[in-house]
Amino acid sequence: MSEPSDKVTEALETVKEKINEFAESDTVQDAVSTAKDKFNEFAENEKVQDALSTAKDKLDELKAKISGS
Image (cartoon, rainbow, N blue to C red; front, side, top):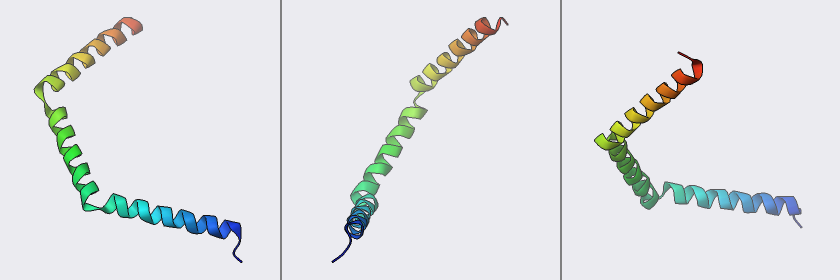
């Protein structure tokens, strides 16, 4: 009879294999690729770039006020 820890280890290995199979599937890989593309489109969007620039400027202003510069 196998030890309970052997059964747990075997179950964990099976779960690990299934997760890897899922992660490597074409459907998941395609979804990840699409998500990356959409994120890049969003990050490169002119309005997003303007908002980031404005946020950076405001943080610099706040930093200057805090440091007394």
